[in-house]
Amino acid sequence: MYDEQKYEDFIQEVKQKDLFRQAKVYEYSQGVEYSFENKTLINFSSNSYLGMHLDKRVVEASSHATQSLGVSSIASRLVCGTMPLHDDLEKAVAQWKGADESIVFNSGFQANVGLIQALADKNTMIFADKLVHASIIDGIRLSGAKFQRFHHNDISSLGKLLERYQDVEHKIIISETVFSMDGDEAPIADLVSLSKKYEAFLYLDDAHGAGVYGEDGCGPTGRWAKDVDLLLGTFSKAFGSFGAYACISKALKDYFLNTCRSYIFSTALPPGVIAANLKSLELMASEEYEAKRRSLLEKCKYLRESLKQKSYQLIEGEGPIIAVLIGSEEGALNKSKELFEKGFLIPAIRPPTVPKGSSRLRLTLSSLHTYRQIEDLLAHF
Image 1 (cartoon, rainbow, N blue to C red):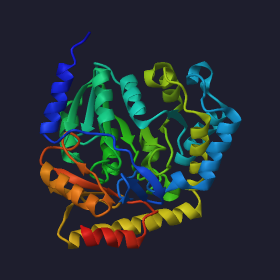
Image 2 (cartoon, one colour):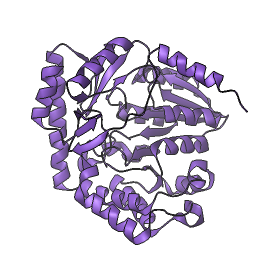
Image 3 (cartoon, rainbow, N blue to C red):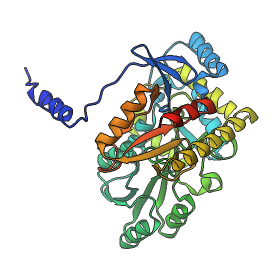
Image 4 (cartoon, rainbow, N blue to C red):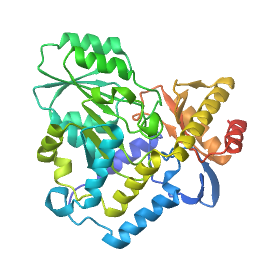
């Protein structure tokens, strides 16, 4: 029998550092109201930026597909798990983004790990923003590629690295469009420019941009979309569902179908999820959801300005991820607990998720939040 002591020692160590994590069970009430151990909380930590997970049309589409086709796709995509729904979704995503093709994955994490592992090898040099998501870092490590991390959103830093390694034949630039922990936006036009200048492959993760920004919710890439070699997005944020997609060329799609291990060796997303994604995508381009996006961004602006007036230090941004810098881990934890007692669910984000000394409260707004709820939060902040 194996010795569990080293795992118990690890648990004790992280508990002593106040870094022990647990999956707490929250019960949904209505809108943005949740309860934990009979305590009602206003949730300011969700990724469902437009409240689409509660849209009855999305729920009904998922329910109908499940009742008609069952709860599973019963196989991987390349065996017999690709249903007409999967094909319809990939065509719809490509049309929405103005891409040649798209490919659907089970999650954003799975997509990043598999795509980067397939794209890069030991002869590749990857240049990644210092704050890219953990799934990107894991994908790079699994690929065996050499990589350099440029200072966050620092085009000068990236340019110097590209100049230094300009003779490397296979170069990949990786960034997020909207950063998950900071909420700030990448300088997309500059990234496009450098990728062209140094003939580098440009890979952007749009998980937190799609659905929130741009015409029809197409995200902050906007008119540069055709200049991005791979644009990844998820259905688990503004779309209120689950899964991910990558917008790519026809040649790249065929390549990934034959090389991307996380795609090849995973059972396909179930029909209920795919149907929900299709309905969400259809609604995303509607005037109703355009109005929701405008309303959400107005609320974001109001909350940001109000917190600044209360002398809180915020990371600049425009969207629903609002990072309130506290600094110390203890301070962030105490503020989170204080707000929890007052009825607000806002997590403290600490190392190793963010760099040491930059612990923060990470607020996320939804179009479901009312101004009264925002005012209540401000009164207790």
